Length: 183
Image 1 (cartoon, rainbow, N blue to C red):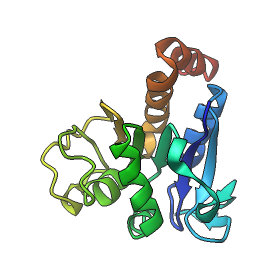
Image 2: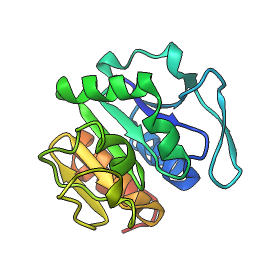
Image 3: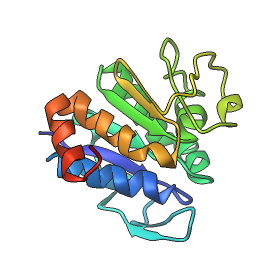
Image 4: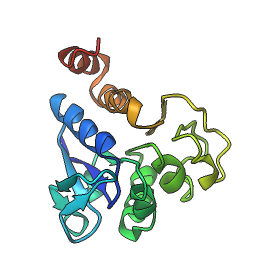
């Protein structure tokens, strides 16, 4: 299985990033964290420092099944201004591969670059105005084609399990959820 990437920017939401990586790895998916700068150490929105597996200059996302964006502020803002990441996201969707974003990132990163057009999406309440997208539903998680979006930190497990389900099927997602005592 090819490696998926979860991108970390200064001010990322720790729960959304680390719980998502944890759940995907429990499912047996190959996923690495990626700093969007040349420094592998990234400080989250609540002061937790994470050492990313890779830095953005060292990855080739051309075969990644998933590009994943946690939210958080100013994390989502920092992701949105990373030119390399924006180009990777556009290429990913154009190639028919999957993108997932949670919290502020659907509205602040995916929306402004046109990746939500024609897709239902959800985001953190109050972030909807960051882009012109009429189809924010307010649901905990939206799965629409190759794009999965999540509402915020409290729905991180559902968000990550949706990625597992889309990749490996319902049974695999249920097995991970059961092992975590979620069901």
